Image 1: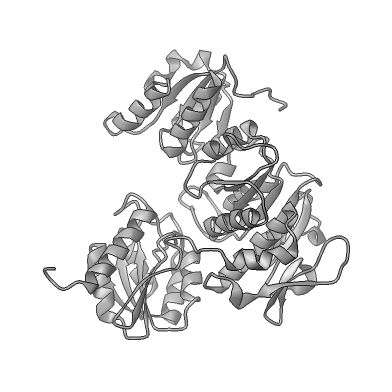
Image 2: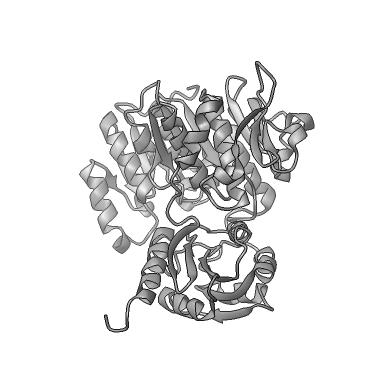
Length: 466
């Protein structure tokens, strides 16, 4: 690397943020015989457990106010993705000319294996898991990590040069890359999200575009031709920022794409060799609900083809994929009503995609902590697709206003929301948990939110007092 940092013995490193990613960075760096410090801007009373965990790997905690005592000894700092680059601690590092790296940059520099990186506003986790499944089915040794739930830094440990890393990366993580250079970069879509962190959609999109910033013609870029912001990167438009070889998927523009639908069949147009189109599979064979998942499947198939999988092997591999929890997962059917957990839906675009998946009366449970996004488009789709809305969390009044015209109820807990939704649902219909918001006002995570939904649905099946 041109800046010389290899995170090796003798260096002194500060970890900024003691969440899951920060602790994982400490655990891995401890193996490299570096001197470790850690800091976090949360109140000290909330940090007892993470400080103890960091100490177990030899990291000494330093409060933000005391960083002046060690800053002259630091070679660099590693920033956890949940900490914004504008935080006072990061500014303090910049003022002292201490280089600041993100966790995925650290992982990249310690990694021997090539990387497939996936980003987008919605569908990242599903597509990341699907790519991992396709590569394994084709015989590759694969490590899946990143924003999908397990820190990437832990997955690269022990990965050899003939393995593959499949990484879900967020805009937050991409903000701090320097040399990060995936062999295959997948950009799924760009829709309003995290506008409490970004000043505009253009700024948010630029963070996403960084996934291909360091790629060259030895790499591959997989893009969504149906997304206007991403389509602007197409080589026909003369945008020089994508230097990699380009593969494009579409539901709407088959004349310009590498993968498209022809008579309901996902079809691949090879970019080299025999140019005749290759049918891969029928769209109804994809084991995922919704048109958006047709796009996710296409992205995953193109990534697998770029890695070297054979087209004829991918149909059976795709059909054997098991959908992930909390993503349009059918929890149960009670009295003829299907209860569907889409708790990983954390932005309005995901709610819109979920609502468009089903042709049945829908009672939607939505709400949580807003991320500064506009709910007007989501509200319009609720009016078109839902028979009723049960709103929860801090954003409940705002979502109810956006969906005015639809029968709306505000619930004060998940148990209350499920009971009220069940009263509004009809046989043959659906109760859909698709919050469109972060979970942290009511739950520790989106996973806990989905689990609480499932428990509340189960309670519907149990007799009172059982």
